[in-house]
Length: 184
Image (cartoon, rainbow, N blue to C red; front, side, top):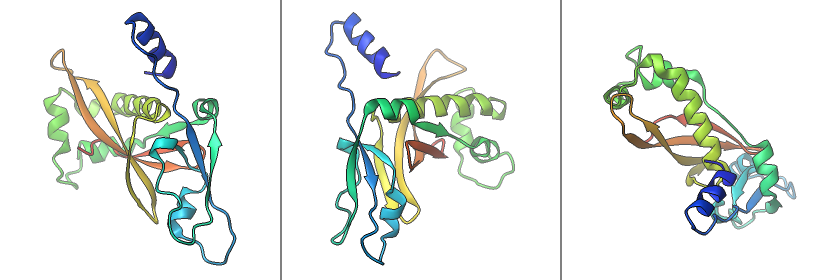
């Protein structure tokens, strides 16, 4: 659900409207010859002020946090998921992974034929929840900053909703990319 929908829902139910998230943009400054790989990966990435990686990141950190407007995030943030994260990975159609994730989705009524729908739905919800700041910071290393986003989908076999955690990587200018459709 986007911010405006949340405001309207709160008004209808007589609740307090949600606070618009406040955002930071992580900026790496080259003030020496030594550069932290983690800081370089964070350069240009957007995080809500209450869910920003620890800053300063280390003793000699030259990075700064610059305010980013909610409007900038809403208008520019993107989320992508590779089809291969669903077929063959999630549904393990080639028998390479052995993670058993396909059993959960099959129990919810989904098959490999639903891969495109799941991809689009997880991208949509991932973007909406990222923009609203509804994510949890995960591991940060030389590969970048991971975040977790909770996804809700309707079961196909029952009138019920299932909730699970998806894993994402944060990239500059509000881009997030799915790393795993089902992380827990």
